[in-house]
Length: 617
Image (cartoon, helix red, strand yellow):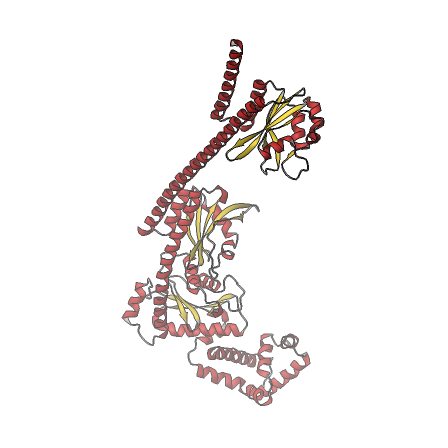
Protein backbone atom coordinates (compact mmCIF):
# COMPACT_ATOMS: atom_id res chain seq x y z
CA UNK A 1 0.00 0.00 0.00
CA UNK A 2 2.82 2.35 0.96
CA UNK A 3 4.69 1.52 -2.24
CA UNK A 4 1.62 2.36 -4.27
CA UNK A 5 1.22 5.63 -2.40
CA UNK A 6 4.87 6.49 -3.04
CA UNK A 7 4.45 5.88 -6.78
CA UNK A 8 1.40 8.12 -6.82
CA UNK A 9 3.28 10.84 -4.96
CA UNK A 10 6.25 10.51 -7.30
CA UNK A 11 3.96 10.74 -10.36
CA UNK A 12 2.29 13.81 -8.87
CA UNK A 13 5.70 15.39 -8.34
CA UNK A 14 6.60 14.62 -11.95
CA UNK A 15 3.38 16.26 -13.16
CA UNK A 16 3.84 19.31 -10.98
CA UNK A 17 7.45 19.61 -12.10
CA UNK A 18 6.41 19.28 -15.74
CA UNK A 19 3.69 21.89 -15.40
CA UNK A 20 6.10 24.20 -13.58
CA UNK A 21 8.55 23.70 -16.42
CA UNK A 22 5.91 24.79 -18.90
CA UNK A 23 5.15 27.90 -16.85
CA UNK A 24 8.84 28.70 -16.49
CA UNK A 25 9.33 28.37 -20.25
CA UNK A 26 6.49 30.82 -20.85
CA UNK A 27 8.07 33.28 -18.45
CA UNK A 28 11.39 32.97 -20.26
CA UNK A 29 9.63 34.06 -23.43
CA UNK A 30 10.52 31.10 -25.66
CA UNK A 31 8.94 30.81 -29.09
CA UNK A 32 5.61 29.05 -29.63
CA UNK A 33 7.29 26.27 -31.62
CA UNK A 34 9.76 25.54 -28.82
CA UNK A 35 7.00 25.77 -26.19
CA UNK A 36 4.69 23.32 -27.99
CA UNK A 37 7.56 20.93 -28.76
CA UNK A 38 8.38 20.96 -25.03
CA UNK A 39 4.72 20.18 -24.25
CA UNK A 40 4.74 17.28 -26.71
CA UNK A 41 7.89 15.86 -25.12
CA UNK A 42 6.42 16.32 -21.63
CA UNK A 43 3.24 14.41 -22.60
CA UNK A 44 5.29 11.54 -24.00
CA UNK A 45 7.46 11.32 -20.89
CA UNK A 46 4.61 11.63 -18.36
CA UNK A 47 2.22 9.25 -20.14
CA UNK A 48 4.82 6.96 -21.72
CA UNK A 49 3.49 7.55 -25.24
CA UNK A 50 5.59 6.95 -28.33
CA UNK A 51 4.86 10.19 -30.22
CA UNK A 52 3.11 13.49 -29.56
CA UNK A 53 2.27 16.63 -31.54
CA UNK A 54 0.50 19.91 -30.97
CA UNK A 55 -1.53 21.40 -33.82
CA UNK A 56 -2.76 24.97 -34.17
CA UNK A 57 -4.89 26.62 -36.88
CA UNK A 58 -3.12 28.52 -39.64
CA UNK A 59 -3.54 32.29 -40.12
CA UNK A 60 -6.72 31.78 -42.19
CA UNK A 61 -8.14 29.20 -39.73
CA UNK A 62 -8.75 26.77 -42.59
CA UNK A 63 -6.34 23.96 -41.61
CA UNK A 64 -4.55 22.66 -38.54
CA UNK A 65 -0.75 22.48 -38.76
CA UNK A 66 1.75 20.68 -36.54
CA UNK A 67 3.54 23.46 -34.64
CA UNK A 68 5.37 21.34 -32.05
CA UNK A 69 6.15 17.60 -31.87
CA UNK A 70 8.18 14.87 -30.22
CA UNK A 71 9.23 11.61 -31.88
CA UNK A 72 7.57 12.31 -35.24
CA UNK A 73 9.67 12.25 -38.40
CA UNK A 74 10.05 15.22 -40.69
CA UNK A 75 8.39 13.21 -43.50
CA UNK A 76 5.26 12.64 -41.39
CA UNK A 77 5.10 16.33 -40.37
CA UNK A 78 5.52 17.38 -44.02
CA UNK A 79 2.77 14.94 -45.09
CA UNK A 80 0.33 16.39 -42.57
CA UNK A 81 1.21 20.03 -43.04
CA UNK A 82 1.61 20.08 -46.83
CA UNK A 83 0.51 16.94 -48.66
CA UNK A 84 -2.63 16.05 -46.70
CA UNK A 85 -3.47 19.05 -44.48
CA UNK A 86 -5.96 18.68 -41.65
CA UNK A 87 -8.85 20.72 -43.02
CA UNK A 88 -11.29 22.48 -40.71
CA UNK A 89 -13.85 23.31 -43.38
CA UNK A 90 -15.39 21.76 -46.51
CA UNK A 91 -14.55 18.14 -45.72
CA UNK A 92 -17.04 15.25 -45.84
CA UNK A 93 -15.20 13.18 -43.25
CA UNK A 94 -13.49 15.27 -40.54
CA UNK A 95 -10.26 14.01 -39.03
CA UNK A 96 -9.96 13.26 -35.31
CA UNK A 97 -7.97 16.45 -34.77
CA UNK A 98 -10.48 18.64 -36.62
CA UNK A 99 -13.36 17.04 -34.70
CA UNK A 100 -11.64 17.67 -31.38
CA UNK A 101 -10.88 21.28 -32.39
CA UNK A 102 -14.38 21.96 -33.66
CA UNK A 103 -16.38 20.15 -30.96
CA UNK A 104 -14.02 20.96 -28.08
CA UNK A 105 -13.99 17.35 -26.81
CA UNK A 106 -11.36 14.54 -26.87
CA UNK A 107 -11.50 12.24 -29.92
CA UNK A 108 -9.59 8.93 -29.97
CA UNK A 109 -8.83 6.34 -32.66
CA UNK A 110 -7.79 2.84 -31.54
CA UNK A 111 -6.72 1.67 -35.04
CA UNK A 112 -5.58 4.32 -37.50
CA UNK A 113 -5.38 1.81 -40.35
CA UNK A 114 -9.06 0.85 -40.21
CA UNK A 115 -10.68 4.10 -39.02
CA UNK A 116 -12.22 5.95 -42.05
CA UNK A 117 -11.54 9.40 -40.58
CA UNK A 118 -7.82 8.62 -40.68
CA UNK A 119 -7.86 7.56 -44.31
CA UNK A 120 -5.71 10.32 -45.87
CA UNK A 121 -2.99 9.77 -43.23
CA UNK A 122 -3.14 5.95 -42.98
CA UNK A 123 -0.03 5.41 -45.10
CA UNK A 124 1.87 8.08 -43.19
CA UNK A 125 0.76 6.53 -39.89
CA UNK A 126 1.98 3.15 -41.08
CA UNK A 127 5.35 4.59 -42.06
CA UNK A 128 5.61 6.44 -38.75
CA UNK A 129 4.68 3.25 -36.90
CA UNK A 130 1.72 4.18 -34.69
CA UNK A 131 -1.66 2.49 -34.37
CA UNK A 132 -3.71 4.45 -31.82
CA UNK A 133 -4.07 8.17 -31.22
CA UNK A 134 -6.09 10.66 -29.23
CA UNK A 135 -6.70 14.38 -29.94
CA UNK A 136 -7.30 16.57 -26.87
CA UNK A 137 -8.64 20.13 -27.55
CA UNK A 138 -6.68 23.04 -26.11
CA UNK A 139 -9.67 24.90 -24.73
CA UNK A 140 -9.36 28.50 -23.56
CA UNK A 141 -11.91 31.20 -22.58
CA UNK A 142 -11.42 32.81 -25.99
CA UNK A 143 -12.00 29.53 -27.86
CA UNK A 144 -10.12 26.40 -28.88
CA UNK A 145 -6.45 27.15 -29.56
CA UNK A 146 -5.44 23.81 -31.09
CA UNK A 147 -5.12 20.10 -30.20
CA UNK A 148 -2.71 17.90 -28.25
CA UNK A 149 -2.29 14.64 -30.22
CA UNK A 150 -0.79 11.56 -28.58
CA UNK A 151 0.19 8.34 -30.45
CA UNK A 152 1.06 4.74 -29.43
CA UNK A 153 2.76 2.06 -31.53
CA UNK A 154 0.39 -0.65 -30.36
CA UNK A 155 -3.36 -0.63 -30.18
CA UNK A 156 -4.40 1.22 -27.07
CA UNK A 157 -7.58 2.45 -25.49
CA UNK A 158 -7.22 5.78 -23.68
CA UNK A 159 -9.23 5.28 -20.47
CA UNK A 160 -11.03 7.91 -18.46
CA UNK A 161 -8.08 8.60 -16.13
CA UNK A 162 -5.72 9.10 -19.05
CA UNK A 163 -8.15 11.44 -20.76
CA UNK A 164 -8.56 13.41 -17.52
CA UNK A 165 -4.80 13.77 -17.08
CA UNK A 166 -4.33 14.75 -20.71
CA UNK A 167 -7.16 17.27 -20.39
CA UNK A 168 -5.43 18.82 -17.37
CA UNK A 169 -2.21 19.02 -19.39
CA UNK A 170 -4.07 20.47 -22.38
CA UNK A 171 -5.71 23.11 -20.20
CA UNK A 172 -2.31 24.08 -18.83
CA UNK A 173 -0.95 24.24 -22.39
CA UNK A 174 -3.85 26.47 -23.45
CA UNK A 175 -3.20 28.69 -20.43
CA UNK A 176 0.51 28.78 -21.31
CA UNK A 177 -0.28 29.64 -24.93
CA UNK A 178 -2.63 32.41 -23.85
CA UNK A 179 -0.02 33.74 -21.46
CA UNK A 180 2.67 33.57 -24.15
CA UNK A 181 0.42 35.44 -26.55
CA UNK A 182 -0.28 38.06 -23.92
CA UNK A 183 3.44 38.37 -23.31
CA UNK A 184 4.05 38.69 -27.06
CA UNK A 185 1.29 41.28 -27.39
CA UNK A 186 2.62 43.13 -24.40
CA UNK A 187 6.14 43.04 -25.82
CA UNK A 188 4.89 44.26 -29.18
CA UNK A 189 2.92 47.09 -27.56
CA UNK A 190 5.94 48.06 -25.46
CA UNK A 191 8.15 48.03 -28.58
CA UNK A 192 5.59 50.10 -30.48
CA UNK A 193 5.31 52.57 -27.60
CA UNK A 194 9.08 52.75 -27.37
CA UNK A 195 9.37 53.33 -31.11
CA UNK A 196 6.60 55.94 -30.95
CA UNK A 197 8.31 57.66 -28.06
CA UNK A 198 11.62 57.66 -29.94
CA UNK A 199 9.86 59.07 -33.00
CA UNK A 200 8.25 61.77 -30.88
CA UNK A 201 11.61 62.61 -29.36
CA UNK A 202 13.15 62.72 -32.87
CA UNK A 203 10.31 64.90 -34.12
CA UNK A 204 10.65 67.20 -31.14
CA UNK A 205 14.39 67.41 -31.69
CA UNK A 206 13.84 68.08 -35.40
CA UNK A 207 11.23 70.76 -34.66
CA UNK A 208 13.56 72.39 -32.16
CA UNK A 209 16.41 72.42 -34.68
CA UNK A 210 14.06 73.66 -37.42
CA UNK A 211 12.92 76.46 -35.11
CA UNK A 212 16.58 77.37 -34.52
CA UNK A 213 17.21 77.42 -38.28
CA UNK A 214 14.12 79.56 -38.89
CA UNK A 215 15.16 81.92 -36.10
CA UNK A 216 18.62 82.20 -37.64
CA UNK A 217 17.23 83.01 -41.08
CA UNK A 218 14.63 85.49 -39.87
CA UNK A 219 17.18 87.17 -37.58
CA UNK A 220 19.44 87.67 -40.60
CA UNK A 221 16.57 89.27 -42.49
CA UNK A 222 15.51 91.48 -39.58
CA UNK A 223 19.09 92.65 -39.10
CA UNK A 224 19.23 93.89 -42.68
CA UNK A 225 20.64 90.79 -44.30
CA UNK A 226 19.72 90.02 -47.89
CA UNK A 227 19.26 86.88 -49.96
CA UNK A 228 23.04 86.41 -50.20
CA UNK A 229 23.29 86.31 -46.38
CA UNK A 230 20.46 83.77 -46.07
CA UNK A 231 22.04 81.69 -48.86
CA UNK A 232 25.41 81.75 -47.10
CA UNK A 233 23.79 80.54 -43.86
CA UNK A 234 22.00 77.78 -45.80
CA UNK A 235 25.25 76.66 -47.45
CA UNK A 236 26.88 76.48 -44.02
CA UNK A 237 24.02 74.31 -42.68
CA UNK A 238 23.97 71.99 -45.70
CA UNK A 239 27.75 71.80 -46.13
CA UNK A 240 27.04 72.23 -49.84
CA UNK A 241 27.41 74.92 -52.46
CA UNK A 242 24.30 77.10 -52.82
CA UNK A 243 23.38 79.33 -55.77
CA UNK A 244 20.23 81.46 -55.90
CA UNK A 245 19.15 82.73 -59.32
CA UNK A 246 16.16 84.73 -60.40
CA UNK A 247 14.03 83.25 -63.16
CA UNK A 248 15.68 85.76 -65.51
CA UNK A 249 19.17 84.51 -64.65
CA UNK A 250 20.34 87.12 -62.11
CA UNK A 251 22.60 85.55 -59.48
CA UNK A 252 21.40 86.69 -56.06
CA UNK A 253 23.70 84.39 -54.07
CA UNK A 254 26.67 82.11 -54.63
CA UNK A 255 28.03 80.57 -51.47
CA UNK A 256 29.97 77.44 -50.62
CA UNK A 257 33.22 75.71 -51.46
CA UNK A 258 32.87 75.39 -55.24
CA UNK A 259 30.07 77.54 -56.63
CA UNK A 260 31.93 78.22 -59.88
CA UNK A 261 31.30 74.69 -61.17
CA UNK A 262 27.60 74.89 -60.35
CA UNK A 263 27.31 78.36 -61.88
CA UNK A 264 29.08 77.22 -65.04
CA UNK A 265 26.75 74.24 -65.38
CA UNK A 266 23.69 76.45 -64.93
CA UNK A 267 25.01 78.93 -67.50
CA UNK A 268 25.24 76.07 -69.99
CA UNK A 269 21.56 75.24 -69.78
CA UNK A 270 18.31 77.15 -69.99
CA UNK A 271 16.88 74.91 -67.30
CA UNK A 272 16.48 77.68 -64.77
CA UNK A 273 14.43 79.63 -67.31
CA UNK A 274 12.29 76.94 -68.84
CA UNK A 275 11.39 75.50 -65.44
CA UNK A 276 10.90 78.79 -63.73
CA UNK A 277 8.99 81.17 -65.96
CA UNK A 278 7.59 83.79 -63.68
CA UNK A 279 4.55 84.12 -65.92
CA UNK A 280 3.00 80.90 -64.66
CA UNK A 281 1.44 79.98 -61.37
CA UNK A 282 3.46 77.59 -59.25
CA UNK A 283 2.05 75.66 -56.31
CA UNK A 284 4.46 72.72 -55.98
CA UNK A 285 7.06 73.60 -53.35
CA UNK A 286 8.74 70.20 -53.26
CA UNK A 287 12.45 69.74 -53.79
CA UNK A 288 13.42 68.21 -57.09
CA UNK A 289 16.56 66.51 -58.32
CA UNK A 290 17.69 67.36 -61.85
CA UNK A 291 20.69 66.46 -63.98
CA UNK A 292 22.74 69.45 -65.14
CA UNK A 293 25.23 69.14 -68.03
CA UNK A 294 28.96 69.46 -67.42
CA UNK A 295 31.70 70.71 -69.74
CA UNK A 296 33.00 67.19 -70.46
CA UNK A 297 29.60 66.07 -71.77
CA UNK A 298 28.58 64.20 -68.63
CA UNK A 299 26.00 65.33 -66.12
CA UNK A 300 25.80 65.76 -62.36
CA UNK A 301 22.87 65.75 -59.93
CA UNK A 302 21.68 69.00 -58.43
CA UNK A 303 18.79 69.89 -56.15
CA UNK A 304 16.54 72.84 -56.88
CA UNK A 305 13.81 74.44 -54.80
CA UNK A 306 11.47 77.22 -55.88
CA UNK A 307 11.23 80.62 -54.21
CA UNK A 308 7.57 81.48 -54.75
CA UNK A 309 6.22 85.03 -54.55
CA UNK A 310 2.51 85.62 -55.13
CA UNK A 311 2.04 82.08 -56.45
CA UNK A 312 4.76 82.57 -59.06
CA UNK A 313 8.34 81.35 -59.12
CA UNK A 314 10.59 84.34 -58.58
CA UNK A 315 13.88 82.48 -58.13
CA UNK A 316 15.43 79.04 -57.73
CA UNK A 317 17.66 77.76 -54.95
CA UNK A 318 20.26 75.39 -56.43
CA UNK A 319 22.58 73.10 -54.50
CA UNK A 320 24.81 70.21 -55.45
CA UNK A 321 24.24 66.51 -54.76
CA UNK A 322 21.24 64.21 -54.53
CA UNK A 323 17.89 64.81 -52.85
CA UNK A 324 18.18 61.45 -51.08
CA UNK A 325 21.35 62.62 -49.31
CA UNK A 326 19.50 65.48 -47.64
CA UNK A 327 18.46 64.89 -44.04
CA UNK A 328 14.98 65.92 -42.85
CA UNK A 329 16.61 68.97 -41.22
CA UNK A 330 18.35 69.84 -44.52
CA UNK A 331 15.03 69.70 -46.35
CA UNK A 332 13.28 71.88 -43.80
CA UNK A 333 16.21 74.30 -43.83
CA UNK A 334 15.88 74.72 -47.61
CA UNK A 335 12.11 75.23 -47.27
CA UNK A 336 12.54 77.87 -44.56
CA UNK A 337 15.31 79.58 -46.51
CA UNK A 338 12.99 79.72 -49.53
CA UNK A 339 10.27 81.30 -47.37
CA UNK A 340 12.60 83.97 -45.97
CA UNK A 341 14.01 84.63 -49.44
CA UNK A 342 10.47 84.99 -50.79
CA UNK A 343 9.76 87.64 -48.16
CA UNK A 344 13.00 89.42 -49.08
CA UNK A 345 12.11 89.30 -52.78
CA UNK A 346 8.61 90.54 -52.06
CA UNK A 347 9.99 93.43 -50.05
CA UNK A 348 12.52 94.19 -52.80
CA UNK A 349 9.80 94.00 -55.43
CA UNK A 350 7.57 96.39 -53.54
CA UNK A 351 10.47 98.82 -53.20
CA UNK A 352 11.41 98.31 -56.87
CA UNK A 353 7.83 98.89 -58.00
CA UNK A 354 7.68 102.14 -56.04
CA UNK A 355 11.03 103.18 -57.53
CA UNK A 356 9.80 102.13 -60.98
CA UNK A 357 6.77 104.41 -60.74
CA UNK A 358 8.86 107.30 -59.41
CA UNK A 359 11.46 106.70 -62.15
CA UNK A 360 8.63 106.73 -64.69
CA UNK A 361 7.54 110.10 -63.34
CA UNK A 362 11.09 111.44 -63.75
CA UNK A 363 11.23 110.06 -67.31
CA UNK A 364 7.90 111.61 -68.26
CA UNK A 365 9.02 114.91 -66.76
CA UNK A 366 12.21 114.87 -68.81
CA UNK A 367 10.56 113.92 -72.10
CA UNK A 368 7.69 116.39 -71.67
CA UNK A 369 9.86 119.33 -70.62
CA UNK A 370 9.87 122.44 -72.78
CA UNK A 371 12.51 124.41 -70.96
CA UNK A 372 14.79 124.23 -67.91
CA UNK A 373 14.05 121.34 -65.56
CA UNK A 374 12.31 122.11 -62.28
CA UNK A 375 14.22 121.79 -59.03
CA UNK A 376 11.64 119.28 -57.74
CA UNK A 377 12.22 117.01 -60.75
CA UNK A 378 15.99 117.17 -60.25
CA UNK A 379 15.59 116.45 -56.54
CA UNK A 380 13.33 113.47 -57.26
CA UNK A 381 15.85 112.11 -59.77
CA UNK A 382 18.68 112.52 -57.29
CA UNK A 383 16.73 110.69 -54.57
CA UNK A 384 16.44 107.70 -56.89
CA UNK A 385 20.18 107.64 -57.58
CA UNK A 386 20.03 109.35 -60.99
CA UNK A 387 22.68 111.93 -61.93
CA UNK A 388 21.25 114.06 -64.73
CA UNK A 389 24.29 116.31 -64.78
CA UNK A 390 26.36 113.80 -66.74
CA UNK A 391 25.84 112.73 -70.38
CA UNK A 392 23.34 109.95 -71.03
CA UNK A 393 22.61 107.63 -73.92
CA UNK A 394 18.93 107.20 -74.78
CA UNK A 395 17.74 103.65 -75.43
CA UNK A 396 14.33 103.34 -77.09
CA UNK A 397 13.02 99.80 -77.49
CA UNK A 398 9.93 98.61 -79.24
CA UNK A 399 7.91 96.14 -77.22
CA UNK A 400 5.19 93.61 -77.93
CA UNK A 401 2.54 94.72 -75.47
CA UNK A 402 0.92 91.32 -75.57
CA UNK A 403 3.86 90.37 -73.31
CA UNK A 404 3.41 92.98 -70.63
CA UNK A 405 3.56 90.52 -67.72
CA UNK A 406 6.49 91.20 -65.41
CA UNK A 407 8.09 93.87 -67.62
CA UNK A 408 9.38 95.82 -64.64
CA UNK A 409 11.01 92.71 -63.09
CA UNK A 410 12.54 91.70 -66.43
CA UNK A 411 14.06 95.13 -66.96
CA UNK A 412 15.29 95.36 -63.36
CA UNK A 413 17.01 91.97 -63.65
CA UNK A 414 18.52 92.88 -67.03
CA UNK A 415 19.93 96.14 -65.65
CA UNK A 416 21.18 94.44 -62.46
CA UNK A 417 23.21 91.88 -64.46
CA UNK A 418 25.15 94.56 -66.34
CA UNK A 419 28.64 95.52 -65.04
CA UNK A 420 29.31 98.88 -63.44
CA UNK A 421 28.16 98.89 -59.84
CA UNK A 422 29.60 102.34 -59.13
CA UNK A 423 27.71 104.12 -61.90
CA UNK A 424 24.61 106.27 -61.20
CA UNK A 425 21.28 104.55 -61.66
CA UNK A 426 19.80 104.64 -65.18
CA UNK A 427 16.33 106.12 -65.68
CA UNK A 428 14.12 103.33 -67.02
CA UNK A 429 10.42 103.45 -67.79
CA UNK A 430 7.65 103.32 -70.36
CA UNK A 431 6.78 106.36 -72.46
CA UNK A 432 4.35 106.53 -75.39
CA UNK A 433 4.27 102.74 -75.83
CA UNK A 434 8.07 102.47 -75.89
CA UNK A 435 10.49 101.31 -73.24
CA UNK A 436 12.92 104.16 -72.67
CA UNK A 437 16.18 104.06 -70.72
CA UNK A 438 18.52 106.97 -70.07
CA UNK A 439 21.87 105.28 -69.58
CA UNK A 440 24.65 107.26 -67.82
CA UNK A 441 27.80 107.43 -69.95
CA UNK A 442 30.20 109.41 -67.80
CA UNK A 443 33.29 109.87 -69.94
CA UNK A 444 32.60 106.85 -72.18
CA UNK A 445 31.47 106.94 -75.81
CA UNK A 446 27.90 106.29 -76.95
CA UNK A 447 28.91 102.86 -78.28
CA UNK A 448 29.60 101.72 -74.70
CA UNK A 449 25.83 101.70 -74.03
CA UNK A 450 25.15 99.20 -76.83
CA UNK A 451 25.51 96.28 -74.39
CA UNK A 452 22.88 97.79 -72.10
CA UNK A 453 20.55 98.43 -75.05
CA UNK A 454 20.97 94.85 -76.24
CA UNK A 455 20.28 93.49 -72.74
CA UNK A 456 17.07 95.53 -72.51
CA UNK A 457 16.01 94.39 -75.98
CA UNK A 458 16.53 90.74 -75.12
CA UNK A 459 14.74 91.12 -71.78
CA UNK A 460 11.67 92.41 -73.61
CA UNK A 461 11.54 89.46 -76.00
CA UNK A 462 11.64 86.68 -73.34
CA UNK A 463 14.88 85.30 -74.74
CA UNK A 464 13.62 85.20 -78.37
CA UNK A 465 16.32 87.20 -80.20
CA UNK A 466 14.53 87.07 -83.57
CA UNK A 467 11.11 88.18 -82.36
CA UNK A 468 9.39 90.53 -84.82
CA UNK A 469 9.20 93.32 -82.26
CA UNK A 470 12.79 92.83 -81.13
CA UNK A 471 14.39 96.18 -81.97
CA UNK A 472 16.19 98.80 -79.89
CA UNK A 473 17.64 102.17 -80.96
CA UNK A 474 20.54 103.92 -79.25
CA UNK A 475 20.65 107.72 -79.58
CA UNK A 476 22.66 110.54 -78.05
CA UNK A 477 24.75 111.30 -76.15
CA UNK A 478 22.57 113.88 -74.39
CA UNK A 479 24.42 116.39 -72.21
CA UNK A 480 21.68 119.01 -71.97
CA UNK A 481 18.62 117.64 -70.10
CA UNK A 482 16.36 119.94 -72.14
CA UNK A 483 17.34 117.98 -75.27
CA UNK A 484 15.73 114.73 -74.14
CA UNK A 485 12.38 115.36 -75.95
CA UNK A 486 14.15 115.99 -79.26
CA UNK A 487 16.42 112.95 -78.81
CA UNK A 488 13.41 110.75 -78.04
CA UNK A 489 11.70 111.96 -81.21
CA UNK A 490 14.81 111.08 -83.23
CA UNK A 491 15.18 107.65 -81.62
CA UNK A 492 11.50 106.82 -82.02
CA UNK A 493 11.66 107.90 -85.69
CA UNK A 494 14.72 105.71 -86.21
CA UNK A 495 12.89 102.74 -84.68
CA UNK A 496 9.90 103.29 -86.96
CA UNK A 497 12.16 103.73 -89.99
CA UNK A 498 13.94 100.47 -89.15
CA UNK A 499 10.57 98.75 -88.86
CA UNK A 500 9.50 100.07 -92.27
CA UNK A 501 12.74 98.68 -93.70
CA UNK A 502 12.00 95.28 -92.18
CA UNK A 503 14.83 95.40 -89.65
CA UNK A 504 14.38 93.44 -86.39
CA UNK A 505 16.24 91.35 -83.86
CA UNK A 506 19.03 93.88 -83.29
CA UNK A 507 20.18 97.07 -81.59
CA UNK A 508 20.86 100.06 -83.82
CA UNK A 509 22.62 103.36 -83.35
CA UNK A 510 20.94 106.21 -85.19
CA UNK A 511 24.19 106.55 -87.16
CA UNK A 512 23.78 102.94 -88.35
CA UNK A 513 20.99 104.24 -90.61
CA UNK A 514 23.51 106.31 -92.56
CA UNK A 515 22.38 109.57 -94.12
CA UNK A 516 18.80 108.78 -93.11
CA UNK A 517 19.87 108.95 -89.50
CA UNK A 518 21.20 112.46 -90.10
CA UNK A 519 17.95 113.50 -91.78
CA UNK A 520 16.04 112.33 -88.67
CA UNK A 521 17.92 114.94 -86.66
CA UNK A 522 16.71 117.86 -88.84
CA UNK A 523 13.87 119.48 -86.89
CA UNK A 524 12.40 121.43 -89.87
CA UNK A 525 10.35 118.69 -91.57
CA UNK A 526 8.53 121.28 -93.73
CA UNK A 527 11.69 121.98 -95.70
CA UNK A 528 12.36 118.23 -96.00
CA UNK A 529 8.86 117.72 -97.35
CA UNK A 530 9.34 120.55 -99.87
CA UNK A 531 12.55 118.95 -101.14
CA UNK A 532 10.86 115.56 -101.55
CA UNK A 533 7.92 117.15 -103.33
CA UNK A 534 10.25 118.99 -105.72
CA UNK A 535 11.98 115.74 -106.75
CA UNK A 536 9.22 113.13 -106.43
CA UNK A 537 6.04 115.21 -106.68
CA UNK A 538 5.39 114.56 -110.37
CA UNK A 539 5.83 110.83 -109.89
CA UNK A 540 3.58 110.80 -106.84
CA UNK A 541 0.83 112.74 -108.71
CA UNK A 542 1.03 110.24 -111.57
CA UNK A 543 0.58 107.36 -109.13
CA UNK A 544 -2.40 109.10 -107.56
CA UNK A 545 -4.18 109.82 -110.84
CA UNK A 546 -3.34 106.58 -112.70
CA UNK A 547 -3.34 104.12 -109.80
CA UNK A 548 0.27 103.11 -110.42
CA UNK A 549 3.08 102.51 -107.90
CA UNK A 550 6.00 104.11 -109.69
CA UNK A 551 7.47 105.63 -106.46
CA UNK A 552 7.72 102.16 -104.95
CA UNK A 553 9.27 100.78 -108.15
CA UNK A 554 11.81 103.61 -108.16
CA UNK A 555 12.70 103.01 -104.51
CA UNK A 556 13.33 99.29 -105.08
CA UNK A 557 15.30 100.00 -108.26
CA UNK A 558 17.57 102.44 -106.45
CA UNK A 559 18.05 99.99 -103.60
CA UNK A 560 19.05 97.30 -106.14
CA UNK A 561 21.44 99.55 -108.14
CA UNK A 562 18.96 99.69 -111.05
CA UNK A 563 19.01 95.88 -111.49
CA UNK A 564 15.68 95.24 -113.22
CA UNK A 565 15.74 91.44 -112.75
CA UNK A 566 16.29 91.63 -108.98
CA UNK A 567 13.68 94.37 -108.67
CA UNK A 568 11.17 92.30 -110.65
CA UNK A 569 11.76 89.33 -108.36
CA UNK A 570 11.20 91.42 -105.25
CA UNK A 571 8.04 93.03 -106.62
CA UNK A 572 6.76 89.71 -108.03
CA UNK A 573 6.45 90.93 -111.61
CA UNK A 574 8.20 90.52 -114.97
CA UNK A 575 11.52 92.11 -115.86
CA UNK A 576 9.99 93.65 -118.97
CA UNK A 577 7.40 95.36 -116.80
CA UNK A 578 10.12 96.89 -114.63
CA UNK A 579 12.02 98.11 -117.71
CA UNK A 580 8.86 99.72 -119.08
CA UNK A 581 8.15 101.36 -115.68
CA UNK A 582 11.74 102.65 -115.56
CA UNK A 583 11.34 104.27 -118.98
CA UNK A 584 8.11 105.92 -117.79
CA UNK A 585 9.78 107.12 -114.54
CA UNK A 586 12.65 108.72 -116.48
CA UNK A 587 10.13 110.40 -118.81
CA UNK A 588 8.07 111.83 -115.91
CA UNK A 589 11.12 112.99 -113.93
CA UNK A 590 12.82 114.35 -117.04
CA UNK A 591 16.16 112.68 -116.38
CA UNK A 592 18.01 109.42 -116.85
CA UNK A 593 18.60 107.26 -113.79
CA UNK A 594 22.13 106.57 -114.93
CA UNK A 595 22.98 110.24 -114.47
CA UNK A 596 25.04 110.47 -111.25
CA UNK A 597 23.79 113.93 -110.23
CA UNK A 598 20.17 113.03 -110.90
CA UNK A 599 20.58 109.70 -109.10
CA UNK A 600 22.03 111.45 -106.03
CA UNK A 601 19.07 113.83 -105.79
CA UNK A 602 16.54 111.00 -106.26
CA UNK A 603 18.26 108.72 -103.71
CA UNK A 604 18.32 111.55 -101.16
CA UNK A 605 14.66 112.34 -101.78
CA UNK A 606 13.69 108.70 -101.30
CA UNK A 607 15.57 108.53 -97.98
CA UNK A 608 13.93 111.77 -96.84
CA UNK A 609 10.57 110.32 -97.82
CA UNK A 610 11.26 107.35 -95.54
CA UNK A 611 12.19 109.73 -92.71
CA UNK A 612 8.96 111.68 -93.17
CA UNK A 613 6.94 108.47 -93.23
CA UNK A 614 8.60 107.32 -90.01
CA UNK A 615 8.02 110.74 -88.42
CA UNK A 616 4.34 110.68 -89.40
CA UNK A 617 4.00 107.17 -87.93
